Image (cartoon, rainbow, N blue to C red; front, side, top):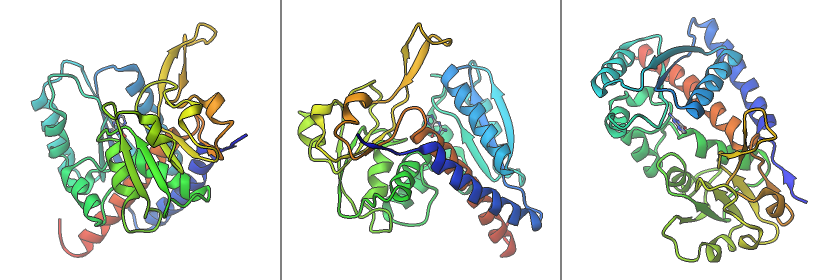
Length: 299
Ligand code: GUN
């Protein structure tokens, strides 16, 4: 049986480190602040946002809530972002995705000041990541990298197969792990919905990262013995035995794949808590950077 990579435990360790650093900043009268913007009432987004705010409180980061109606215009959201960009108490801005159809995600993400872009979605940060410059890393792939490193599975020289090519996970995951840097140096293959014979690739993976959004997509026959599996999927499947009427499952057939894998993340309790912790880390970093730029006389 595979070793279970416990995301809750690793996230708690990192949160402990963040809480100490927040205290250190407090001695210099700086409290990191995160603006959390939610448009509409998507139930999954509401849950994520609530958990993100609770995490902030746990480590001493201030969170500022902005809940806008589903009918909110693009202009209204852009006006709010312009205000938050100027607000000195706000070090990080998070706009929960997806956004309602009438709002262009690209326009909104472009409008966030790159120094407050704690999601790492602004093209400036995406470009810096690709170029190997210091940047805010997108939280989910950064969390996956931390899970690997803190469990003793350095991706250096390994064949990592990423299944999924979204801007939020697959693409930045590949960019992070292919860097010439500590915690990276991997050989990366990216598979997606148009890949022919995905199993041919996934069977070659030393480390498999599943982020395709299809419940139980990765079957036991698609992986080799001893693979390390990171399951990014969070899928709601109907389950009448649960109070909520559904349960959460990943993109990996956990029951069977875990018999072949050396280590695997569970869903829930794997990548999810790490994503939220990386957001806290980026917000702390944004507050520190702000202090540094003020010291040098810039606004
Ligand atoms: N929706 C799903 N994942 C994310 C994320 O990491 N950040 C934001 N802002 N929205 C998301």
